[in-house]
Amino acid sequence: MDEKLKPLTIRLPVKELEILKRYCEDRARTQTDVLREFIRSLEKEIDS
Image 1: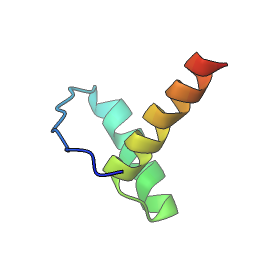
Image 2 (image 1 turned 135 degrees about the horizontal axis):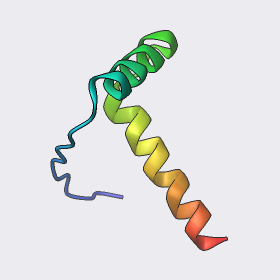
Image 3 (image 1 turned 135 degrees about the vertical axis):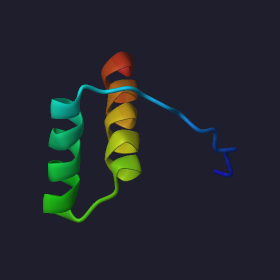
Image 4 (image 1 turned 180 degrees about the horizontal axis):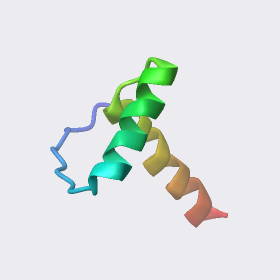
């Protein structure tokens, strides 16, 4: 699956950004990785 990657910019309240950062640090994952996984989970939810 060779998809072209496009940038995505989002604005978050400071508290939500800190939650994301802490989650990523605790699991040694990047923010991009975590957000991609979440978006993929949305597709599964839509298809069910």
